[in-house]
Length: 292
Image (tube, rainbow, N blue to C red; front, side):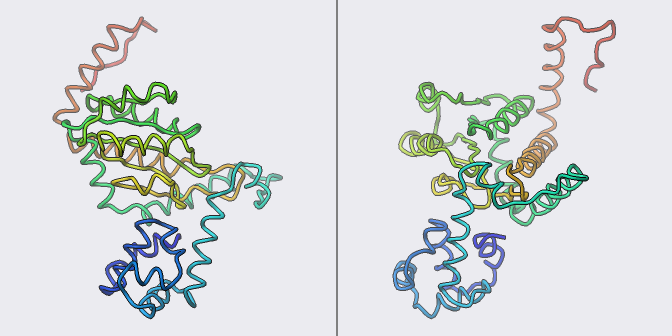
């Protein structure tokens, strides 16, 4: 569990002074916790002893240990390639690699509900389901596969879904369409892409739509610009991180939006099915059954 998730988990038990410290640390995480103790105390308007008590609640022997944990997280997030990851991991490949790998992924998947709160999940689903908001989606080199899946799934449920192309030359056209009430979903995992951060910064300078960030436990730099951030564990002890946890959360969002808005979704799916059958060439003598 990251320092951030631990702070969030114990938020209800913090004193007024400790909540101020938590707000400063989380507002610019993890760099907010890398200030000197005097600088953090001044910024949070608390005393240094309050910071010492705050770090003790996190199980740290002192402020230095607290900062060491933050630095360790930064080192993890800065690993540049699968080559770097493989150099520090061991995978039993001689016998039963598939079983071992699936167990690792299941372990990470089981941690999702510890890092993604129901309140954040529900709030994001409500934003995405709101027909007054257009939805724009973009990911990185690999993570845009999640963006493609999510945009296609949402198109079945509602209108005004746009998958932003990866070519930056085309971004201005989409940015000019955006309004402040619209939602931009960005996928950015470690080896964070500077281009995605540039895109998010451009949004903040233009229409200022609501950014929803899907990232890992080390947090993309875009987190500082996002209205909502979903951070999930992706490391499975191999050269390759897993995208199963974020994919599962996206699937859950699609299910919730569909179920909560079924009176609108059902006729849209029926119309989609009719038009698809009409426009697609027959593949067999027996066409698929229409939706109920």
